[in-house]
Image (cartoon, rainbow, N blue to C red; front, side, top):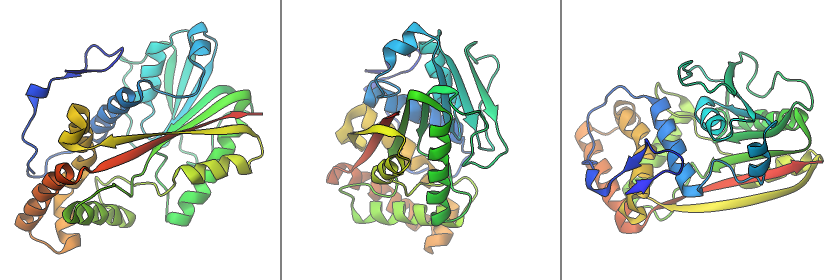
Length: 298
């Protein structure tokens, strides 16, 4: 049994495994997938953040901002855990899972139509600012780096002196110890997202070194700490590895038709490749890596 700390409503039993063979396309709810991903990484890291501010959050009076495409997931969970602090999620995406029935009294999500690289708050407003997996770029790779660097500068601008900033990212464009079909399918999907398709994620190409350099270049940071977690996918990683593998592969299954066209293969060939990929993940010991990067403002 896998149990998520402080989340008694969410548990998974090894006996409740489902057949992971590919199925036909079905309506795909990215918010639900991201919510599952949130709790998986919360379990892997054993917390929602690595910045050393837990005691201050418990005492209360802290102002926290999350910048992301579905901020209500992390923001509402944090607000529930730390009821004496205030949490705001800034949503730049077109989808939002906000529900007034589930919104804690000490949290809210604000929708902004401004550029994804700006933050509509005055200077020195927040004590802690958090971002994970990054916002999708509006256009192109160079735009992604430029927008993210601009966003980092705005995050530091609205951060109080001695406040903390934290990022969490995955090595989205690289799984490790992959077989041939795993590499072909994942790279085809990532390539497809660069051209755009309905229901596709937009994966970032910014790694922990880029974030480190962005933070240091602002000359407003005292120090930068990087922590890394290696997660085995599939059966080798236990129930959590299976769940994370399923979450990460759902976009590939959901975009089967688009990928068949993009790769020039039939649906039968795609099904065969997909199921071989599932075997490869276990046979090769495929794993992914996530990073947390946090720093304190001068």
